[in-house]
Image 1 (tube, chains in turn blue, orange):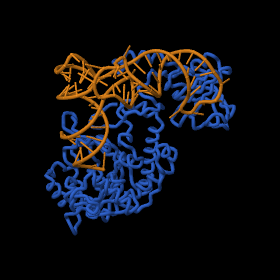
Image 2 (tube, chains in turn blue, brown):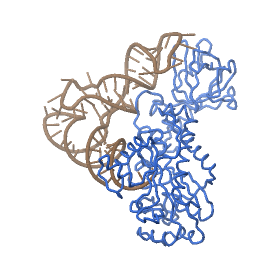
Image 3 (cartoon, protein in one colour):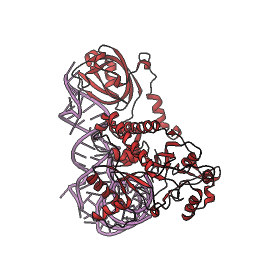
Image 4 (cartoon, protein in one colour):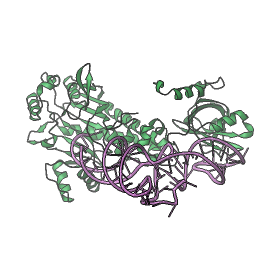
Length: 464
RNA sequence: GCCCUGGUAGUGUAGCGGUCUAUCAUGGAGCCCUGUCGAGGCUCCGACUCGGGUUCAAAUCCCGACCAGGGCGCCA
């Protein structure tokens, strides 16, 4: 790997220094563990040199780690000259370890500072940096993503991933408390849940295989297996030619499936319980991160409004949109609807229920309403006019399922492994899929969904 | 895939036929400064995406390629 960059490799060898005996990494404390109450103690800190302010007779260095920054203060007369010189001239973003004395001091913003007595330059950064970490100039998202390892050092970017962690943590907490079992299903599959156009094809020991676009068929198989209530948080792959601020080629899908439901409403209750709990969890746990991102914490209380697809169309017609009942709501209509529902129901979160069968055509496993087969029990769950969740009760009766597969011009033979589970005891069941990045995108009101992924994959980007 | 817009120092930009030896900020190199935290002062460094064309003259106009941004369709 280094073969292509001998220069970089050589430089790395030269500039890296073994940890000197004066610094014991076993005692290293992260910035959040230090406080003014430790006045006079010897401490070891390590991190990235974020900023150096050399005023001549005194210097200040902000040393950053995952938790924040700590200030190193170097009064020239009290620091050994060689150490002063080394610390004040090391390039920004170099990684260093420092031992020193913690001093409580009201003049320091944190209320304390560290007076260094020894340092180790663990990795000296080259200059100039490909992008600034704390510079006050804008950086294009494309530049940021091309230098993502450096972009992720920025505190507001890191904050997104701390929120993501809390969002998934809150989701797991809720689902676990509701008796759902966390599972993992294969991502290399022989057949897709929907049409073939959106599948990434790959060569599997000479045979054709695909990256899973959804765990749908496996989730349902597990209902046949008697797992009753399961969830999965895993990547899903879509080879759609979408190039927008809300699409990714690889995204994280939070999928839920549950047996013995009476109808889609049972599924909706889990959706709203999950979403409300996750938002509340984030609001309580990530106050600092939310404030850094300019987001007001909010606690959402279910139930959320439920509007039938037909009602939504009528609302849009009332607002002057050209649309007919039974017709799909386009992107513009979806956004309008988000505004209307917020105004009339006071909620950013709502369900669109009773989707017309015609609009869920690819979704052959959707159960249709007995009283009106032109409608399904399927719903979308929307957040500020963006689709967050799609789900509903599945068709568990084999003859109808086969008929619906055939109606979609697909061959039941291709789904044999899946259909087999319906022949030997399949309970009525339903579930949903939630786009984790979509959730973050809307919750944090980020301009682009790519912000929510460490290393996003889109139509053109496969590196880094 | 379609429509629109744009590519100028490491980064973000101004300029949009001659006055460009290309603006500003940020950054980098260096110097001064004992309380910085958007530090301050001084010096220097660093760029017109590529290929054709039009013109006396192209960063600037035209064509193509490549790259990027926004929108649509589709979807989580």
